[in-house]
Structure formats: structure tokens, C-alpha cells
Length: 287
Length: 125
Image (cartoon, each protein chain N blue to C red):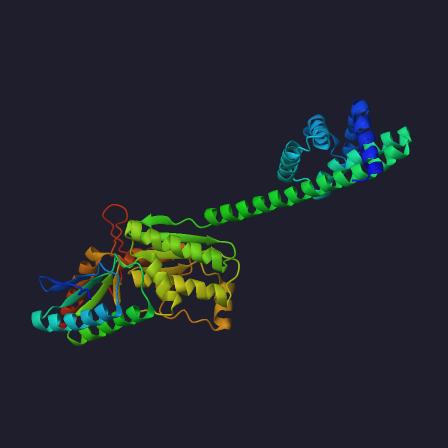
């Protein structure tokens, strides 16, 4: 480091110490104005004082920037969660530059201005750091949510002794089908169910890939000794499936979950008796 | 080479596979089973693969072959206790074990055989 830069650096450090209150006030104002109307929620949550102290410590002889990094990381993480944009988050840090520039200009000495250039580079680094942390936090939130969605959207429910159902909601892709398949097969083993109903009422569209996944699931269940019924096929979907030329072969398909349940009950030999002695059998023909 | 034991229970033969299947032992099992079916006049064979964690296409195909052989000898083969992971593997390999009957566990396998026997008696009538 050359001598003039060193001198400038010392000058800035002095200025930061002398005008601490003023810089902090300006910084707060600027950051508030920059976070575009979110002054109250933008300003209040930021621990300007702590960050300022940590920044001064990191500039000092110790060069210990870990405190500052920790504070900035916390700040950008919490802002990512609260739904701030990345620019709003980084602007909080960049606001400090403007506040310090005003002080340096008021001081007027060449050292102070030279030092400001150096200082501004450091603040840029920290700004970029908040950016990166922000992006990382956002990605973490997204992947967490995707995982939760995967968990939420694939329940396997027991309809009857020996009959389980999977109501599928939303678009089916390979990853989800894999989860559904594994969960269903696991459930078949755990409950010893011989019948499974896959209800696709909540699936917006069926293309060749989705159909392929469904067929695979049915065949896998069959290999384990359970029969699958596919239900909830809407008229448009039936139309699409036929137009695409997808063959469901000997897989039983039903229009509604109720029909599928009735079919499964019939297959497992359950009979219903309705009312007083008036007997209505669900059973038709044994096959 | 380990030989898989074939157990006789009434007029059923039960094969419980407890070892990692090698191609050789599956071939030996195929021969043993055919011999045993003829010897005992069994009406059904149950192959329990609950303990089997890994199958390849060869073993998958051999299960089909065994089922076809025993059917020739008038005994129905039922594969029971297939694990989900195994079922998924077989499907991904494109094997659907055509002609092999399956059941969730040994108990349900025996029930299925009894049911099939009953059905056969009815059609014969």
C-alpha cells in the first residue's frame, strides 16, 4: 500500500470516528429513502449502529471482518425472508458511501477524498457480499418450499381395510411421480393393502410422460401383488389420452373416486347392507 | 454355491430366498423346483423374496421362467413380498413379469392360491 493511500485511509478512519453521529443519521435517512417507501420497515430493522461499529473494527488494525460479515449476513437473510428486493437490501449498505462522502467533501482535504475512494471500494465489497448472501438465502427458501410442497402434495390415505388412495394434486413430473410411487408402494407393504386407487382429479393435464409414470406405478404395484385403479379422469383428459394414443391396457380406470372405491370393495368381496333388512349388494360378478 | 431350500407344506412348495441371488443359484433353484413339483405333485409354489434387496434383469426373467415351468407341471407360482425398491427397479428395467402372479406377503399368497383352486373347481363343475 502506497503512502498517500495510507494517509487517506487514516484520515477516513479519523473522520468516521469524529462524525459518527452525523454519518449514522445521514445513513439512516439515505437508506430509508432508498428502500422506496418502506422507510419504517426498512429503517427500523437495520442495526445501523452495530454495523457501523463492526465496520470500524474491520477497518482498524485488527482487520477482523467476521463480526461485520455476520451482521450483514443476518441482515440480508432476514430481508430475503421479508420479501425485500436484492437492490433494496444492497442499497442499505451502499447508503453508507453517500453519507461518508458528504463528510469527506466537507473535510475537503485531498487525503480525505483519496481515502474515500479506498473506503468506497470496501463498502462495494460488503455490498456485493450482502447480495450473495441474499441470493443464497432466497435459494434456500425456494428449495425448502419445493421440498415441503413435495411432502404436502403426496399423501397416501387409507380408504378401507386393504384399500389405500393417493389423491394427486398439481402437475406431475418425474421427481414427484418417483416420490408418489415410492410412498404408495411403501404404504401397500405397511398396511398390507391389496388395492390402491390413484385419483388424478387434481392433475390439470395428462401427457404421454405423465401417463407413462402412472403406468409404471401401476405395474410396480402389480409386481408387489396389489391392484391399482386410476380414477378421477375428466372428460377432457380422457379425450387427450385417446387422442395421444396412450394404451392403458388392462388397467382399470374409473370416472370418480367413488366408483373406484366401489370397484375396489367389490374386488375385495365387501358387501353393503342398506337400511333395515333392505339388502343392497354392491357385489355383482366374481371374476 | 448356496442352494436355496425348497420347503413342502401340505400341497404347497415354499421357497424363501434369504441369500443374495447369484445367477448359478437361481438356475439351480429352477431345476430343484421342477424336480420337487413333479415329486410331490404340488398344486402351488410360493417364492418369498421379502429378504431380496437387489434384482437384475436375469433374475427377473428367471422368475418368469420358473412360473412358466411350474405352470406346465400344473402348479401355480406366486411371488410374494417384493420390496418397493425391487418393484421399481424391475419396472425401470422394463420387466413386468408377465404370467407371474404376485401377492403382498406369504399369507396373502396362500390365500390367493386357495382362491385360485376354488375357482378352478368351480369352472370344472
